[in-house]
Length: 243
Length: 106
Image 1 (cartoon, rainbow over the protein chains, first blue to last red):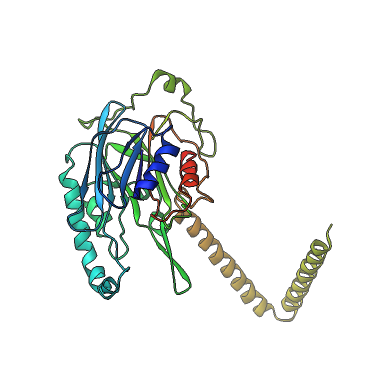
Image 2 (tube, helix red, strand yellow; image 1 turned 120 degrees about the horizontal axis):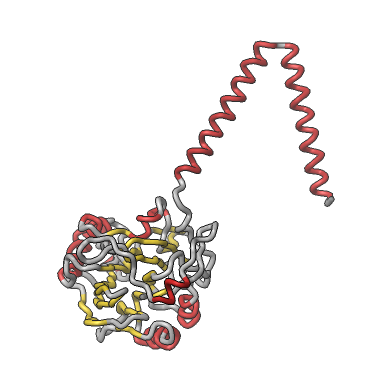
């Protein structure tokens, strides 16, 4: 499953053409402008879009069924620090002070669309340059920061890069959060040129049923046959991968 | 052996010879200074060793190192995984087709 931000109508056509064979299910909001889009190998149900009440962008919601479990998806693009007009530039100090509040309100709006006890994945561009309020807000609500759950140095790896005054800056602003029904088996940041963002990829394993019991993922018979022990070095035979 | 390597080997061996000569002279001329120098040497070596051990243990997993390129391939660690990805493609991305192809290889 892939969540993309800043998808223009033309960009969506290209993505659909290139990814359609592998990720045949997609959702692109009927809104104007550059939006959040979802592509998936599994059918997307109840897909809908909600523009942000507090920011410039919006949120895409959908449900998938993974290993017989319904999973809620929310792809977000939280409000950025706006600098592209003189007025915005003059307001930067105010935006910096205010950003945490805006992001918390935006995530409140997202959480209103999700059932609290259901398996969930919230991912996207959190634009958390001036404030870590967004990621911290979700962590306080029991969601797991996927990369941070497997890597101590997760916050040290920038996922967004910019250049100013001849110097490079960067910060980790793209996140994948999941509920406790999942465990992150692997997380990785892959360079995303020519975008100024990198790609964040995580492999999530189902570890708990809806009632809280530990449960082995229900794999297809052929997948179980192909399951192989980890090789030295941490790599395994590739099994069925579900986007 | 290439010239550069021969020169480096010669320099290293002459440095070792110089150090051992200096140590033996110091040991013979001033045994007290020799003892304190030895203590200092072991202290420096021990401190360096501690730093190395601390650095290695602090590094939990190197799984979040940035890949060399968008197209870097990797295999799944387990079967039955849900792979999720987020990517701000950037509205002015001039080569989205190539980017999309690379995403498929992730």
